Length: 257
Image 1 (cartoon, rainbow, N blue to C red):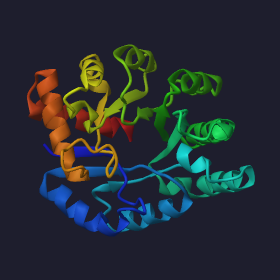
Image 2: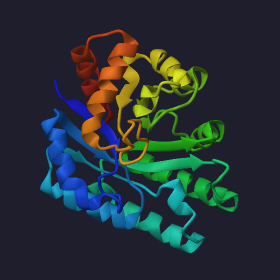
Image 3: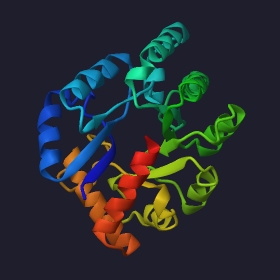
């Protein structure tokens, strides 16, 4: 069985020049599929170009990331959302979308974050696409918005989940939710993340690198091939065979499609 990196950023402008090298290294490490998290319109175009070159390993997700909402005024944001709808059939999923209320974010843009989030939920429902969610310091608000939009049955990937076991249980009350864990739980002091991981039903698990971000290694690097380490540690935490975990996660990812 191969490994799947369910969320990475090969087309981020910081690492785009290394995308093909990273794909080759990932394939060499036994990674069979890479899902790219969407950020903003220009980046969606790079996703499409990469998908055309590597159709068997790359899948796409177009979205307006909460961080990028801070860079747009409302008119520009509405234009980006219209473009998203025009291009949505080129994408396997909608996202990253969600809410990020971390204290260093621009609080004056929180309303715009919610506006963009609601718009993308509606697009996912309209075009029957899964949602890839970025939620930081805003789980209760995000869940309220999803409920208000009538989307609790939507397929959703909570990417790089780092919340508590209690919050995991709240998300998992909705049948379409998968929790995706990145390498954060490999850190020595990541007891909360490991506790949350242990409480997730196996059929609701995904794994990712979120590369180039979320690095956990001492050298500070992160790329899709490192997802192998995530699987290995997860198998250890869950006290199960690595091959069994690979099989289950592959089935989960296929269902998420």
